[in-house]
Length: 120
Image (cartoon, rainbow, N blue to C red; front, side, top):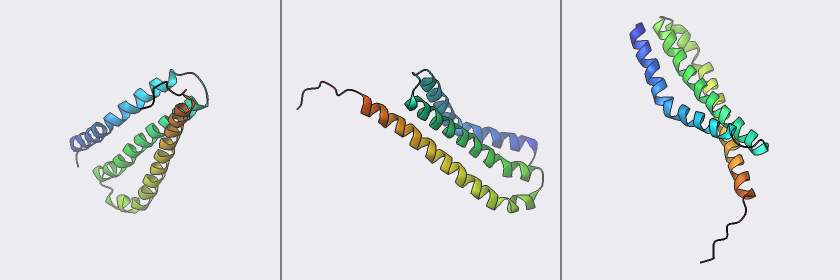
């Protein structure tokens, strides 16, 4: 694998994750602009965890490709178990991030006053 092939692979990995990264950055900007309270802290922490897990997953996907491009095939096979554990940890971080964002949303929805719609 030459340098050009590796670069195209890296750009394709970034391109696939770009919509999610943009959405997480937009969410962070919106949450940072809200008033400081526990809900904001939970949402901010959840979004940061999701962003870090997404970037970590991208790095974990690039590592074997970089090793193959450098010609170290035996290291890739040795690292498969480590990468499996890393992907599991990243999945757990994503799950915690999602729970925190949903918790913040539910907390805000429950604190919202009841609407004055007439019953149907």
